[in-house]
Length: 420
Ligand SMILES: *[C@@H]1O[C@H](CO)[C@@H](O)[C@H](O)[C@H]1NC(C)=O
Ligand SMILES: *[C@@H]1O[C@H](CO)[C@@H](O)[C@H](O)[C@H]1NC(C)=O
Image 1 (cartoon, helix red, strand yellow):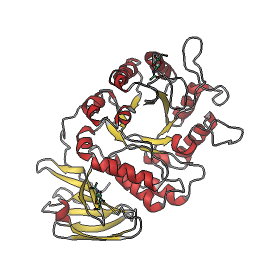
Image 2 (cartoon, protein in one colour):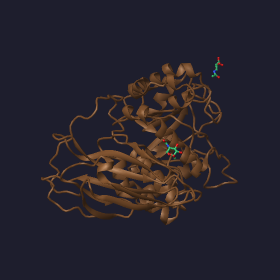
Image 3 (cartoon, rainbow, N blue to C red):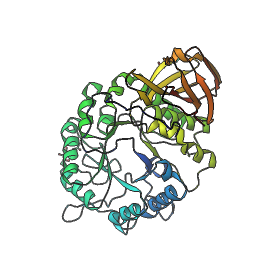
């Protein structure tokens, strides 16, 4: 704990009401197969790297034994390609008999015994994107099947569906899931399929039915892909920010840190900005062979705490020039009487070919608390001191990299000196 006397009470901030299932009050964290193993179903040629129960168990083991779970990564998510090509005679979905011989319920019990939650994938349309049976005409049946299998999370994709049906189908599935009585976090791909028709995307409605939602194209483990998502989220921030909050999150897609095609600097950028946005931190990598440098980035508890801050505010870009952009997120502790926040700040150098130097007064960032802020560098894990509005923050940011600081509100009741 940074302070022994955190006396401030966090008031009611914002008036958005999310899906009333009480779930995902902080952004979900875990691991998902798609952006590393895709739809690889050839387990003879690619043992250990195909979609089967062994691989998901391996990842659950790694989350627990390599410490990820202690940092909050407590979910394993099955993505597409887990099913048989046909439902059974009763219309029930079945997991591929060769690749999931024990079935999904056995898999969720394996996870639960380790304190890991299991996520599953389906599609709202006729077929999944990979061509497996979709939930159309079977929404209630599939909701009941997932509940029977003791699944804790559903990602409902939107391939092979009529876009105009989505405003009926996605809410219907939300109700069916709720009716099962099981706590199932609901992730909707609904707005992602309306990307070309933004006027049809009403996040107030989507947030009533979904705990989180994809709204943009799939990520891949390349800088150009990460950069595109950053641009989309930044350009649309005025529409996105009011819709986010506890229980209702935008999902800019998986964390690709740990794949060797993304550099450590780019990895820190992804973790930092996703945390500024209160985004889900769902990794897609091979935890069995991950390099220590990436593991350390994924296990930075200071950055994760920004992502998981209980206020659940989505931060915004407040400044941008050709050298760097600044992103700011209000976080706890807060002085509600004076309406003063603490902040996480990210300085991002979007250039791919040169470092840039930041030199900016804290006051220019809007950090004007007369008593100042205790400032900590979150990637260097270094305490920078008590800073007031006229003090200057100076740093050099590597290409496609970031600096990230936390500025904790100084207050007469906060008596401890923070330690890094
Ligand atoms: C889904 O299947 C039904 C029944 O075969 C068909 O009428 C409908 O057009 C299909 N929808 C899509 C989006 O493929
Ligand atoms: C930020 O500034 C750069 C350089 O001027 C520009 O290319 C980019 O589009 C800007 N980004 C946003 C989101 O305004």
